[in-house]
Length: 186
Image 1 (cartoon, helix red, strand yellow):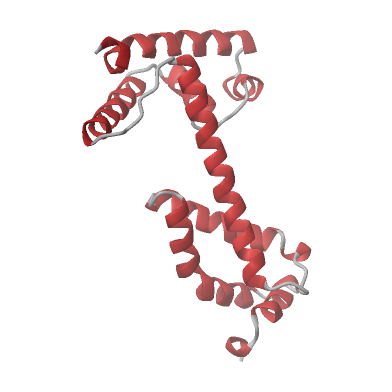
Image 2: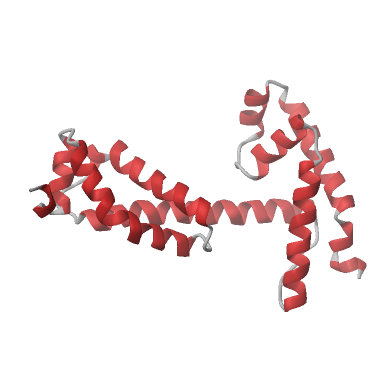
Protein backbone atom coordinates (compact mmCIF):
# COMPACT_ATOMS: atom_id res chain seq x y z
CA UNK A 1 0.00 0.00 0.00
CA UNK A 2 2.85 2.39 0.78
CA UNK A 3 4.33 1.61 -2.64
CA UNK A 4 1.46 3.44 -4.26
CA UNK A 5 1.98 6.67 -2.31
CA UNK A 6 3.74 9.64 -3.86
CA UNK A 7 7.14 10.74 -2.55
CA UNK A 8 5.49 13.75 -0.96
CA UNK A 9 2.97 11.57 0.88
CA UNK A 10 5.79 9.31 2.06
CA UNK A 11 7.53 12.37 3.47
CA UNK A 12 4.40 13.20 5.43
CA UNK A 13 4.44 9.68 6.86
CA UNK A 14 8.14 10.05 7.64
CA UNK A 15 7.42 13.27 9.52
CA UNK A 16 4.88 11.29 11.55
CA UNK A 17 7.59 8.75 12.42
CA UNK A 18 6.85 5.97 9.92
CA UNK A 19 10.26 4.39 9.26
CA UNK A 20 8.88 2.18 6.49
CA UNK A 21 8.16 5.37 4.50
CA UNK A 22 11.85 6.29 4.76
CA UNK A 23 12.88 2.81 3.64
CA UNK A 24 10.69 3.11 0.57
CA UNK A 25 12.09 6.55 -0.31
CA UNK A 26 15.60 5.15 0.11
CA UNK A 27 14.75 2.21 -2.15
CA UNK A 28 13.29 4.54 -4.78
CA UNK A 29 16.20 6.95 -4.91
CA UNK A 30 19.39 5.40 -3.55
CA UNK A 31 20.68 3.92 -6.81
CA UNK A 32 19.98 6.89 -9.08
CA UNK A 33 21.12 9.37 -6.45
CA UNK A 34 24.33 7.39 -5.92
CA UNK A 35 25.07 7.56 -9.66
CA UNK A 36 24.50 11.32 -9.62
CA UNK A 37 26.80 11.86 -6.65
CA UNK A 38 29.37 9.46 -8.12
CA UNK A 39 29.65 11.61 -11.25
CA UNK A 40 29.87 14.85 -9.27
CA UNK A 41 32.62 13.45 -7.07
CA UNK A 42 34.88 12.27 -9.92
CA UNK A 43 33.85 8.65 -9.61
CA UNK A 44 35.12 8.25 -6.06
CA UNK A 45 33.16 5.20 -4.93
CA UNK A 46 33.82 5.40 -1.18
CA UNK A 47 33.19 9.13 -0.96
CA UNK A 48 30.02 8.75 -3.05
CA UNK A 49 28.70 6.07 -0.71
CA UNK A 50 29.43 8.30 2.29
CA UNK A 51 27.71 11.24 0.65
CA UNK A 52 24.68 9.13 -0.25
CA UNK A 53 24.28 8.19 3.39
CA UNK A 54 24.81 11.81 4.44
CA UNK A 55 22.04 12.92 2.08
CA UNK A 56 19.56 10.43 3.51
CA UNK A 57 20.65 11.26 7.04
CA UNK A 58 19.79 14.88 6.28
CA UNK A 59 16.43 13.78 4.91
CA UNK A 60 15.68 12.17 8.27
CA UNK A 61 17.11 15.03 10.33
CA UNK A 62 15.36 17.72 8.28
CA UNK A 63 12.12 15.95 7.48
CA UNK A 64 10.15 18.51 9.48
CA UNK A 65 11.52 21.34 7.37
CA UNK A 66 10.42 19.69 4.12
CA UNK A 67 7.71 21.76 2.42
CA UNK A 68 5.25 19.46 0.65
CA UNK A 69 4.40 22.20 -1.84
CA UNK A 70 7.63 21.27 -3.60
CA UNK A 71 8.58 17.98 -5.19
CA UNK A 72 10.50 15.65 -2.92
CA UNK A 73 12.88 14.71 -5.71
CA UNK A 74 13.89 18.37 -6.18
CA UNK A 75 14.48 18.77 -2.46
CA UNK A 76 16.51 15.54 -2.31
CA UNK A 77 18.72 16.50 -5.24
CA UNK A 78 19.20 19.98 -3.81
CA UNK A 79 20.59 18.41 -0.64
CA UNK A 80 22.90 16.15 -2.66
CA UNK A 81 24.05 18.97 -4.94
CA UNK A 82 24.80 21.27 -2.02
CA UNK A 83 26.85 18.60 -0.27
CA UNK A 84 28.84 17.94 -3.44
CA UNK A 85 29.25 21.65 -4.14
CA UNK A 86 30.65 22.13 -0.65
CA UNK A 87 33.06 19.27 -1.25
CA UNK A 88 34.29 20.91 -4.47
CA UNK A 89 34.78 24.20 -2.63
CA UNK A 90 36.72 22.40 0.08
CA UNK A 91 38.90 20.70 -2.53
CA UNK A 92 39.59 24.05 -4.20
CA UNK A 93 40.50 25.55 -0.84
CA UNK A 94 42.82 22.64 -0.05
CA UNK A 95 44.51 23.01 -3.42
CA UNK A 96 44.95 26.74 -2.92
CA UNK A 97 46.31 26.24 0.58
CA UNK A 98 48.79 23.61 -0.53
CA UNK A 99 49.86 25.70 -3.52
CA UNK A 100 50.34 28.68 -1.24
CA UNK A 101 52.59 26.67 1.07
CA UNK A 102 54.20 24.58 -1.65
CA UNK A 103 54.64 27.47 -4.08
CA UNK A 104 54.74 25.61 -7.34
CA UNK A 105 52.00 24.45 -9.56
CA UNK A 106 51.74 21.15 -11.37
CA UNK A 107 49.13 21.22 -14.11
CA UNK A 108 48.48 18.09 -16.12
CA UNK A 109 48.62 19.11 -19.76
CA UNK A 110 50.04 15.91 -21.16
CA UNK A 111 50.06 12.24 -20.30
CA UNK A 112 53.53 12.66 -18.79
CA UNK A 113 52.23 15.43 -16.53
CA UNK A 114 49.42 13.16 -15.32
CA UNK A 115 51.93 10.44 -14.50
CA UNK A 116 54.00 13.00 -12.58
CA UNK A 117 50.95 14.14 -10.62
CA UNK A 118 50.20 10.53 -9.66
CA UNK A 119 53.80 10.04 -8.57
CA UNK A 120 53.58 13.28 -6.58
CA UNK A 121 50.45 12.06 -4.82
CA UNK A 122 52.12 8.73 -4.01
CA UNK A 123 55.16 10.51 -2.58
CA UNK A 124 52.99 12.93 -0.60
CA UNK A 125 50.98 10.07 0.90
CA UNK A 126 54.18 8.19 1.70
CA UNK A 127 55.60 11.24 3.48
CA UNK A 128 52.38 11.74 5.42
CA UNK A 129 52.49 8.06 6.40
CA UNK A 130 55.99 8.54 7.84
CA UNK A 131 54.95 11.43 10.12
CA UNK A 132 54.60 10.88 13.85
CA UNK A 133 51.00 10.46 14.95
CA UNK A 134 50.46 13.98 16.31
CA UNK A 135 51.93 15.66 13.22
CA UNK A 136 49.90 13.40 10.92
CA UNK A 137 46.76 14.11 12.96
CA UNK A 138 47.29 17.89 12.84
CA UNK A 139 48.13 17.87 9.12
CA UNK A 140 45.12 15.68 8.30
CA UNK A 141 42.71 17.71 10.40
CA UNK A 142 43.88 20.92 8.74
CA UNK A 143 44.27 19.95 5.10
CA UNK A 144 41.91 17.01 4.72
CA UNK A 145 39.21 17.88 7.25
CA UNK A 146 39.42 21.68 6.79
CA UNK A 147 39.43 22.39 10.50
CA UNK A 148 40.60 25.67 11.94
CA UNK A 149 43.72 25.96 14.07
CA UNK A 150 41.53 26.51 17.14
CA UNK A 151 39.47 23.39 16.43
CA UNK A 152 42.64 21.35 15.97
CA UNK A 153 44.12 22.72 19.19
CA UNK A 154 40.97 21.72 21.06
CA UNK A 155 40.95 18.22 19.57
CA UNK A 156 44.66 17.52 20.08
CA UNK A 157 44.77 19.40 23.42
CA UNK A 158 47.77 21.58 22.60
CA UNK A 159 48.11 25.37 22.30
CA UNK A 160 47.14 27.05 19.03
CA UNK A 161 50.71 28.35 18.63
CA UNK A 162 52.02 24.78 18.73
CA UNK A 163 49.52 23.76 16.04
CA UNK A 164 50.63 26.67 13.83
CA UNK A 165 54.28 25.83 14.39
CA UNK A 166 53.79 22.13 13.60
CA UNK A 167 51.88 23.01 10.41
CA UNK A 168 54.57 25.47 9.33
CA UNK A 169 57.44 23.02 9.84
CA UNK A 170 55.48 20.14 8.31
CA UNK A 171 54.78 22.14 5.14
CA UNK A 172 58.40 23.28 5.00
CA UNK A 173 59.59 19.69 5.34
CA UNK A 174 57.14 18.42 2.71
CA UNK A 175 58.21 21.19 0.35
CA UNK A 176 61.85 20.03 0.64
CA UNK A 177 61.02 16.35 0.33
CA UNK A 178 58.82 16.93 -2.71
CA UNK A 179 61.13 19.48 -4.31
CA UNK A 180 61.89 17.07 -7.17
CA UNK A 181 58.36 17.70 -8.45
CA UNK A 182 58.88 21.46 -8.65
CA UNK A 183 58.80 22.32 -12.38
CA UNK A 184 61.42 25.01 -11.79
CA UNK A 185 63.94 22.29 -10.97
CA UNK A 186 63.59 20.48 -14.28
